[in-house]
Image (cartoon, rainbow, N blue to C red):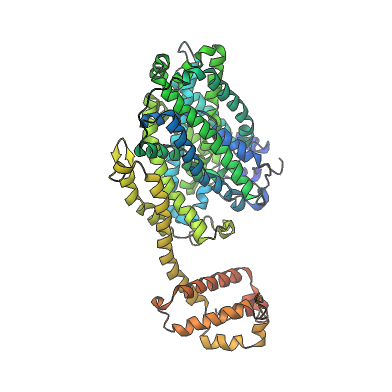
Length: 596
C-alpha cells in the first residue's frame, strides 16, 4: 500500500468482528489497498497525504455530470417558466448556491474531519444527531431518485420490455454499492475516469436530439413567484452537497492551498449542473410539443423520454442511453459513501463496525423505497426536494456563522482530539435554537403544492434564503449573549490575582522581562499592557456584577481567557517553575499558576 492509501490493516483487525466469512473478505481487500476502513474518527495528520488536487474537480464533475441535474431541470416548466427563464434561474441560483459546498470542501484537508463531525463543534455531541438524521434522509432520498432514473433508462434500453424498471433499479443500486463499499481511493479513481464517457455520452445525446429540443411549448410570462419557487428547486439540488463536502477531501495534504480546493470544487459542481439542468428544462419544455416523447414519458417517465429522444440513432442511441444510466453511479456511490458515515454517527455503540458494512445496510433500505417511488417519479421528486433546501440552509447558516464569527474563520480553532468528547464540545443549545427558531419565519415563506405560506403567496418561495440568513443571525445573537456570560465567568476564574497584587507584580523587574514587546517602540510588553487593562476592570467592578461591564471590557476579557487557556494547555512549566518565562508571562495576564 502506498502513502496515499487510506486504509490500515490493523484498523480492520481491531474492528468489532462481523461474520467470519465477511471479515476474511474485508481483510483480504484491505491488504490489497482497495477498501477504506477509516470511519468517522478524524484522519490523523500523517495519513493526510493526497496531493492530486485535480481529483477534487473530477469527483465533483462526475457527481454532477449525469441524469440527476437533468431531472431537476425538468421541474422548471412545471412552474410555468419557458426555456429562457429556466436557464436564467438555473444560472443565477447555481452560481450562488455552489459557494457553500465549495467552501466547506476546503475544511477537509485542514481538519481531517468529516462534515457532520465538524458540525459537532456547533451542535454539540448529542444535538448533532438531528442534522445527521435529516442529512441521512436527504442522502437516501437522492440515492432513491438516482436508482429510479437509472432503472428507467435501463428499462428503456430494452426495446422488447424484457428488462423492467424494477430490475434496472436493483442493478444500479448494486453497482453503486460496490464502488462506495471500497471507499475513498476507489471512489476517486472511479470518478477520475468515469467523467469522460459521461461527458461524451451527454454531448452526443444532446446533438442527436437537437432538432426536437427546438420545439418548445409556449409558456406564459415569468412571474416572481415562479422564478423564486424554481430557484428553491435549484438550491435544493446544490445546498445539500455542502452537508457532506469535506467527506471527500479529508485525506488531502493540509498544506494544499484552500483556494485550489475551492476553485476545483466550484467549477466541478457549477459547470455541469448549469448545462444539464438547462438541458432538462429544454427536454421537459419539448415533451408537450412532441407526441412520441409524450407517449414515451407516460410509459417510462424520464428514462422513456430519453429513449425516445435517442431512438433515431438506433443501436447507438440505446448504447448512449445505457451509458447515461451508468453515469449515475459516480453520484450515487459518493452519496452512499457519505450516507454510510452518517449512519455510523447515529450508532455509537457499533461505531467500530467498518463503514463498508453500513453501505450494505443502506442498499437494503434504498431499493424497496426506489421501487415505490418509481410509480410517479416527478411527483415524488417534487415532494422530496421541497424539504431539502430548508433544513440544509438552516444548518449551513449555523455552521458558517460559527466558523466566521466565533472561530475567526480559522480551521485551527477546531481541535480534532475533542471530536467525541461532550465535555470539550459546545452543548449545542444555541445552534439548535437558531436552526429551529428560524423556522418560525421559514414556514410562512414556503410555497409548495401541499402548502403555501402567507409571505410566499405574495413573493414566491423564500424558504431557503430566510432559513440561511435568519439561522446565522439568531446564532450570533444567542451566542453573543450566552458567550458574554461564559467569558465573564471564565475571566473571573482565571484571573486569580487581586488588583493590588497584579499592580505590585507589574512593577517588578521579573515582570518587565517577560512576554512579547509592543510594536510602538515603548519597550513595554503586551502582557504589561494587558495587566494594566485587567487592573482597570477589577477596580471598576469589584463586586463583579456582569451588568457593569461594557463591550470593551468583555472584549479584553475574551482575549485574557484565550491567552491563559492556551498557555496553560501548552506550558506545563507555568504550574511547576516560578522562574519560568511561562509562569511570569501568565502573571502579567493576572493568573498566578501557583495559586490555581
